[in-house]
Length: 144
Image (tube, rainbow, N blue to C red; front, side):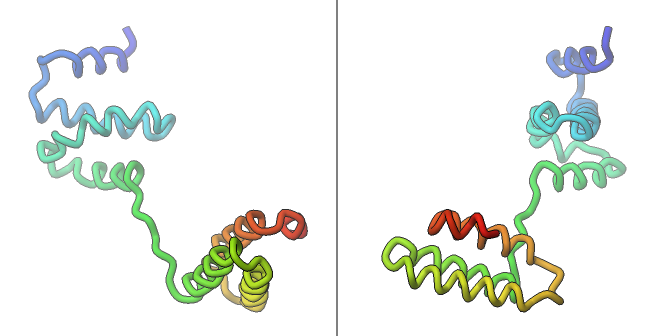
């Protein structure tokens, strides 16, 4: 019989004590996270109520898996945040005044092009700029 099937059978029954169940769920979450996150997620969810039963040696693995299954959103800062605000303001004006919206998007594009030295956050800013252009003017989007 397949070892993973045996593990699933052990989890389905009541033979495992909570500490052993938590360790097994952690190991299965870790193994499946390398191959298929959708298959690993049920093990991860079953592990959550038992997380306090994990041994100290397993906490590092648990924290690593926490980053995999529950990634923290990164808030943009500095120039990225500034550009995103200009882009968002332009997109919001798109429904009422398309020309003003286009002007704001052009302004954001010009600022983005002048920041050739700025390596961080440019990809996100460009992606959102193109997305907002596509909502406003599909012909202009093709130029990107």
